[in-house]
Length: 224
Image (cartoon, rainbow, N blue to C red; front, side, top):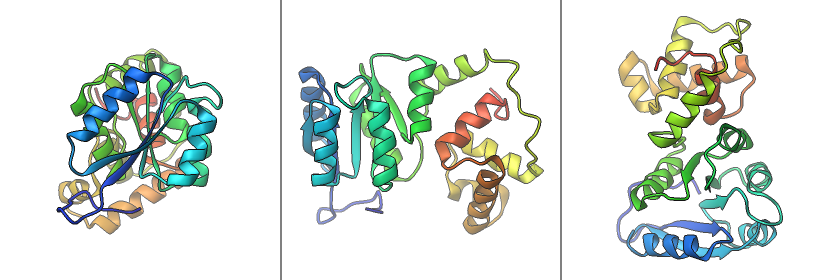
């Protein structure tokens, strides 16, 4: 755990577990990882209960979970996994793209969402992104989030009190900026960025980056 994203030939690979009850999706994932030298498919499972057992046994770096799997559903499995194995990153996928699916997934602790008709590059990018400790909410996913959250015009919370700099940091986080890029943008240290982020989460009573993104979009802090 805690591995860097730059890997040489002797570096450990990103170990991935796929939990999905569709053989075609598992086959597609196998084909993707055969072509990516720094990623390895270490196991597959067909339902949530088997998936949880494999997580405990194999301790993967990344788990790709179908939301609608039999047994423990993907949302509940994500919640259980992120509570018990916080270093393991969750990438959710589903044939559904509803607001409920995406929001519930991120709130449960998932770091990324990729649709079932994913392109290989999307899945690889999502895995690399979550391994950097960042959420994956670009393109397709962020469009769905924005479209649905902006429909709710009466939910703006006027009770939170962030400083101007904290609002800048929150806006940058929601736009996908890394700690390093924010440090350069605002001419502050990475440690200061991390301190601001911790203060923001404390004030808003949020626990991770995905929740910050959802909050920023929901409250129109990020400009579209």
